[in-house]
Image (cartoon, rainbow, N blue to C red):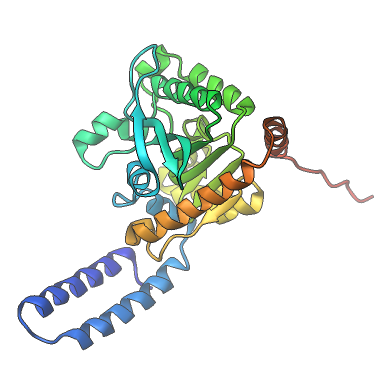
Length: 318
């Protein structure tokens, strides 16, 4: 079976032939068509049989679209708002106002960096307390003006450094959960890449939770689970499978409400297609939620999260 490196090499070869075809005047169209057909077949074979660990790697792919990519494509008139009015700004979490399909919304989004410099600025997508408090400020603003909230989640977890502890990261997350549980406006959250632990949940307590097909959502990373449960970081594949962190499995468990499809190879292989599907999912969800009275919205939100983790014990046969 092919691996992702083989697919990348074949894709690079096709691109090289396209350049030769365009510059040297040599007709390579038949060879290119054959290789493109072969690439499609290999992609279908590889990506239709992904293991949970392979999906984790795809969710973390460095070329995967980030929040700002989707914001620029899906929303119009995005106006960023900064600061938590207490400790400062946090560039790992972006907030602002925008229009979605012509209607005003508040956007809360986690952002990773592409370069080393940008990752230092964005704290590798790990939000600090001032980021979560900034998100809370914007959500309160949204409630005041009856704007729906759209949350884009992509983080390995909340920032674990000394600064976070000094500024009370636990309280910042808890306060967001409390606010979102009773916010009188619709909330739709989408996990677009990694959804790690409380760092994701702090902006993810929503009326509708959607996931991109190759995103992950888990209480702990596979590496962390492997180190704790097996005392062996080499057990990441087993940990990923045990965590049930993929979109199809979480949909089956009732922890999310929908899976947004991605093209073969992941969102980075067809950004326009992925962005279009994401926009459609957001618009549909918000249209449904906007029909509900705020009291009913909160009632349904309460019922939704009361059901999470519900189980029934079977009586033993005598």
